[in-house]
Amino acid sequence: MRDYFTADQVRAAEAPLLAALPEGALMRRAAHGLSVVAAAELRSRTGGVAGRRVTLLVGSGDNGGDALWAGAMLRRRGVVVRAVLLDPGRVHAAGLAALRSAGGRIDSGVEADLGDPDLVLDGIVGISGRGPLRPPAAALVARVSAPIIAVDLPSGVDPDTGVTAGPAVTASVTVAFGALKPVHALAAAHCGRVELVDIGLGLPQASVQAMGAPEIGARWPMPGPGDDKYSQGVVGVIAGSARYPGAGVLCAGAAVAATSGMVRYAGTAAPQVLSRWPEVVAVDGFGAAGRVQAWVVGPGMGVDAEALAVLRAVLGTDLPVLVDADALTLVAADPRLVMGRAAPTLLTPHAGEFARLTGRDPAADRVAMTRALAAEWGISVLLKGRCTVVADPDGSVLLNEAGGSAAATAGAGDVLSGVVGALMSTGLVPLTAAGMGARAHSLAANLAAGEGSVTAAPISADALLSQVRAAVRVLRAQAVPEM
Image 1 (cartoon, helix red, strand yellow):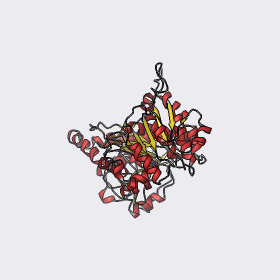
Image 2 (cartoon, rainbow, N blue to C red):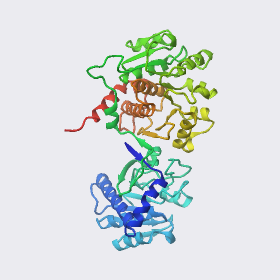
Image 3 (cartoon, rainbow, N blue to C red):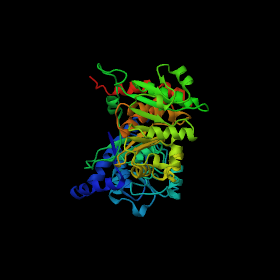
């Protein structure tokens, strides 16, 4: 698991160290880690360190001090270092003295010459900052053309919510001190690659986490020597309609690809589903479905009275249920359908569906909003997005940063529902199943788009679905320890 901590939690963890260590020791510890990452980045990008050029953008807080100390350390390694001070009267005095002593150049103001740097360190604002970059800082950042390393977090991005309300730094690399913050997952497009530097913080138990690929691979249900098709999880799928048969094809197919032991399809698009997935057991409606261990209901099923009756029947069981798409529209009209349901229940809205469910746009604080809905309704919630947020009623949160937006395509949600539903049918609780499924889903999308390619063409949901098995294989392979 990767743990994420709020700015307040990090400051609380820093306080005893600041009291126990000599003045400035904790900052120098962080700066050393920053200078190591910066040197490695210089070496990777330019082939060397000595003689290369680094410009520091220095604000008035501790992040500015971190940048100055790191600049002094880089200067001692032969790097040509220039610092641009945005507020010379409030600069970190000890850091500035260290850079001067090491032979760094000091300039001030937004009109200062940035030089021709190979790399820029963003030390404008730290975890205490809120809101976008102020106009002078924004004007300075706008003149930067070199790759940027953000000091702890990109300036102008909220550390807890990842929200940008105006101009903000977009970094190639972010060096996080002591702990990952929610911003590092929620605003990954601004953070770039995140490098964590251990500075010795004693941190509390995290309530916001992300599952790692090795853990997911190790927990992915796979048949053992004593398993049969019933013991591996039987998932029921009610998806698709005459108008949207593809939703049934995608959702049922994703459950098959996610290694479900059996998929029972009880929607109205059986001919289309069976033509693509002959191993699916198709039945004539919910009442004929037989035994399942979990239900997926909603994608493309419609919102008429008949669909509402089916949804009521599914939710009336004592089985785990994943509620998506059209079923969410029905729930938005009558939240009592799911509120406080005793059996495990997972809602999987995108932002627009979330707003219909709650009357609130989740964009302002996706973690807090998702957590609040889960607690208020007594169910689990998966809020879709580049960074998927999954919350349980007890406040536990899992994040999945997709690494891109390849899955932002019509029908991708139907695939996600099938994958997560298959996992829920094996007995995994909704929080775990959703976290694992979201990771496999994003990996499948990246594989379909050409993982690692910034010029990859947009993908279709069918292309995403075709890569679900491959994504599961990749995750399983990462669970095997290297010999």
